[in-house]
Length: 145
Image (cartoon, rainbow, N blue to C red; front, side, top):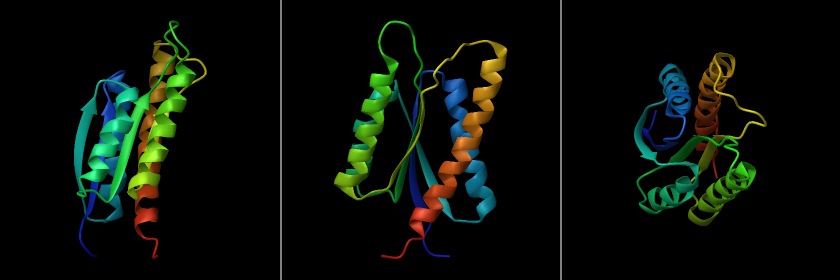
């Protein structure tokens, strides 16, 4: 294979125990794929900070792909769906403006409770979504232009 894929993985710190599962799923899938890669992990306070960090990383010219992971939940104070939409729109703008593929593992459940059943579900779901992001990174990297 050619040069290793240079990947930046941004993760929001809110619900870090769950969001970290996306990184675990991502790296596990990349490791088993045999695709050479390096990964820089960047933590940001919350999902809202991810697009700016993604833009800075993309403009650095160091990365072939950027992945951003967050869990945006309804805290009862503001409309979490507005935050989630702003994040996804921002990440899309980053890839369109910089030509660096940018992937989102930013999930916004309709209902989230911190009980054991929901925690278990989202641990497993983020693990799965991280692996899906790894497959998407490889697929996009393989596209010949």
